Length: 99
Picture 1 (tube, rainbow, N blue to C red):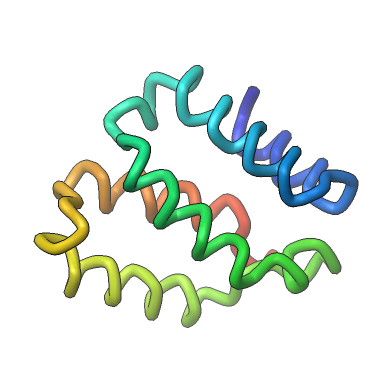
Picture 2: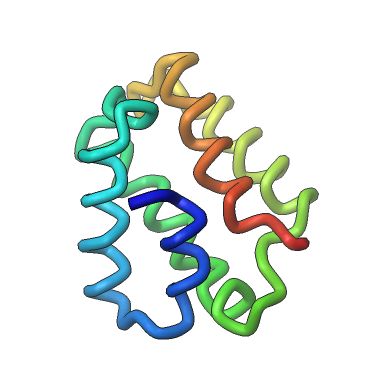
């Protein structure tokens, strides 16, 4: 499964299905394997915050992605995010970016 597939099917999935597909994406995609369970939950919570905007096709605005990445960067030690984890988080969020 690709991240773009997840974005395209987002409006058809329930919260539980989306979470399952998101975890499947992270596990299967070697690009995101560095993310542990705790990191995945943090990213999933960010996506849930913008769920309505993504579902309606608007997506996450670039400024919102920057704001969320700044928060992650500020709390990276507390959240145990490495630089690679931050890069992966940004890549995932950018999949859902406003077109």
